[in-house]
Length: 313
Image 1 (cartoon, rainbow, N blue to C red):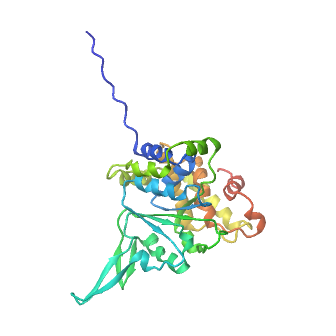
Image 2 (cartoon, rainbow, N blue to C red):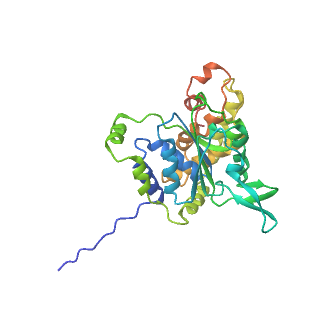
Image 3 (tube, rainbow, N blue to C red):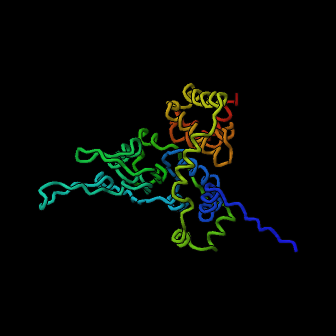
């Protein structure tokens, strides 16, 4: 009698689990989900910009819960103060001293919802946290949890009641993504399917403890050939020479482009970066850092323009 050997199906990779989990809630936006995940795997902060109601906050919620990390949502408003984010020291009569009560910034994933609704003074409270992973309050520097991500959403700058983020704040975000309207089939599924909020309530983490850190270490190990770095430098140098931009990409942006391309290669299952990886993340890394110098440049797709202007070496 022949015994049939039971073959176990290989377990899905951590990256595939996150993509499947997010794709089941954010329909028809696979590329945006991949860009967002690449940003976080590259240890960067993510800015999601688009019109109200297209799923910005939902995507941020999905990413935070899928990563299995502690997260806090901060709803930014025009009357918010920096202490509402960082925390406040309160005098305690019993001890005769001040006690610091940490604010919502002390979490692993921060959802800064509608960040450009707050005043510049409040927006600046995020600067040190995003760059240094620490905050200074009442004369004392306090470290933030590790890992630490900021996922911010914002409405277009022409919306009523917004305060555009300054260039120094925008540069702290490794990548910016836009969702846009859903396709016809995706929107029909939204209209006839389960409410996204109900799906969010049942969403379980897609990563086991330690898997996120392991993935980030794998991103650092992805090989980047010298010829690929030549391509990155050519793209960056073009933005600095082009009359279409008021200022070119900084060295920080160039580093971000390399880190993001590494993360994209890992998501695609490769151990080395190819030019298509750089092209996939270029718009997300570059467009929010480049300020058009004239009206004609504002009406073009900056990412496509750079790809057309700079050939692969």
